[in-house]
Amino acid sequence: MSTITERINLSAPWIDEHDEERVLEVLRSGWLSLGPTGPRFEALLADAVGAPHGAAVSSGTAGLHLCMRLAGVGPGDEVITSPYSFVASANCAIYEGATPVFADIDPNTFNLDPLAVEAAITPRTKAIVAVDIFGYPAEYDELLALCERHGIALVEDACEALGAVYKGKPLGSHGHPAVWAFYPNKQMTTGEGGAVTTHDAAQHELLVSLRNQGRLETSSWLQHGRLGYNYRLDDLSAALGVAQLEKLGRILEARAAVAASYGELLAGVDVETPLADDADHVRSWFVYVVKLPAGVDRDAVMARLSAGGIATAPYLPSIHLQSYMRERYGFTEGMLPVSEDCSARTMALPFHARLERGDQERVVDALRAALEPQA
Ligand SMILES: Cc1ncc(COP(=O)(O)O)c(C=O)c1O
Image 1 (cartoon, helix red, strand yellow):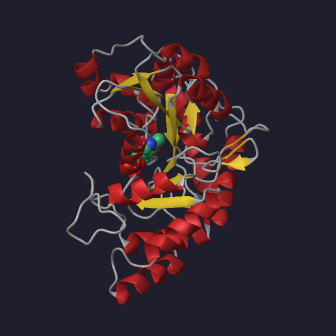
Image 2 (image 1 turned 30 degrees about the vertical axis):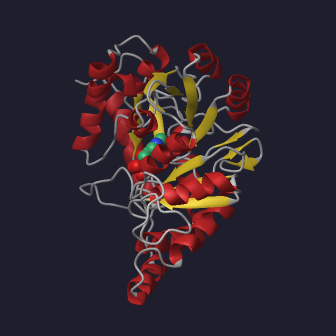
């Protein structure tokens, strides 16, 4: 347990000697990119999520962008997504000249409300980017039915949800492309990095080409068959990914145990704790987000926790109210009331696989005190 003066960080990766060894092996081999470790990482990841193909990329954002290319999204198209997410899930549409259209969320799951999505569909809708926010699976059966009925592509932003299960099967195994991210605050990390898993060989082939400057399988190094990007993941990062995947089960178990411990400690504290799993949705724990009662000054609560050495974050601001979104599209307050209410009241507590019970007690004691009327 940390001493009272020690800061408790919001997140921390779980790196051990095995991770170091795997990275050193690649470093010593001298084969730092386009070597054998990338495909090994991809095979392990695809296997973990129940998909036939995995393409590693340089970030989750890059993966989302490439999925817009897979879906043929372009100028004049609309892409429906969640306002209560990280900006990348909407930015990917803008990169291809399309317009992001936000549908409101369900107040319990914080994920896209399929009825709101249906109401947002127009003849210009080309794709839906569904997000498994905070690792909780979105409503894929309903969303897929909408996509099939309207001829729209479904892309899953599973960047926060590696290891989550929807209707008894892992996210990634349900047929549509899924995007993963491995920044150090995620369940597992490659430093920077991401991946796209697919169930279609042609889509996989296109991803592999797009991430590698548009080279074709048969191209030589300086021949490019299409407009592409450098979205490759290097082999050092892939090696860390291999090591992390080798202990993914332990990581996910440890995170679930830390979350359960918060659940116990927060009983009786005046906050809403994260939605519990049910038969159709099993969360993979990414962050631990609580919702404060309406009317509580969240900034003041966060400042009190910070003064006690405890990091928190206002997870998540609504994307449509970011300054560049307002300027570009004229979005304003009141457009998406459920998302905006969540954005005003939700707060992430320190959370990672090896957060100690004593530190969690310190966090919860400080939160309880911060919520009391101040003298
Ligand atoms: C929901 C969501 N989408 C996309 C991303 C983007 O991933 P990256 O930071 O690897 O580009 C993140 C990462 O924070 C995320 O949480």
